[in-house]
Amino acid sequence: MPDSTLLVLRRRWLPLVFLLGLDACRTAADDGTVVGTLEQVEVDVGPLQPARALRVLVDEGDAVAIGDTLVVFSTPSLAATGEQLEARAVAAARAAEELSRGARPAEIARARAEAEAAAAEAERAVADLARLEPLAARGDISRQQLGTARAAVQVTTARRDAAREALRLVEEGARRERREAAAAEAQSARAAVDAWRATAGDLVLRAPVDGVVTSRHVEPGEVLGAGQSAISVGQPTRPWARVYVSPAVLARLKIGDSVTAWLDGDTARFVGRVTSISTRAEFTPRVALTEQERADLLFGVRIEFTAPVGGAGTRLRAGLPITVRLPAASAP
Image (cartoon, one colour):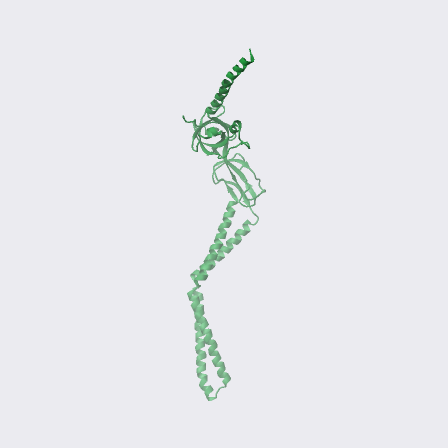
């Protein structure tokens, strides 16, 4: 066959081969299935401050409920600090209460008796001075004796006035500013105790969710830093998978879309929901110019399975591959 004939045949076959390849790619895209790996929501639990583990009450694989104790931690000064703060709070509360109630009846009675005694002494000094002044005028007593009597009147009068002021203050009670300061001190001391109790409570790690212990990162006697994970709790009832789709498939997906999925060799069907779609492409070349490079762009889509069909939800175990059928493209 001449070369020109071969050239014509080649030119006629090339479009046909290209169309067959394009049709195969379209069939794969229209299938709408992608494969991901099942995961489960995990919660890491750890102390909020550096502490030593006293007891670890769970092992990997144990089922736990919300509030179950997982690990008990402690710090060297925990107990001593608590006793000190409790004593300070008790003393501050007593002081504030006494100031708010005012003086006791016995204290008021004693101040009144002292005021009456000082008043009587002042009256006696005044009477003595009145008796001595005529005698001094006649020269029967010395000027020194008269001066002493006058000084006694001044002293006893000042003592009387001081006793009366003391009685007034005792009957009136503490000033408002002093009562408010004492109440504030008592409140501050109580807040310090509450903060210490909260800190002590944080050293007892409890399960925040219902689930299964997936990892145990601490043993009795070990010291963990603040925020370091001690126990990881997984939630088998909240399985999810992340799948990767092309830009063409991404265009027809939206948050809330319902999907179906199945496990390899399993006839059960599971219902899931698209909960997040990545806003950035992954596996992206530095420069995406060619058609092949644009085809390599993939976007992550998270799917949560919350409504298993046929009651087969316990089959969705972390680590298993799962095939997901995405919503079909709408007709143009």
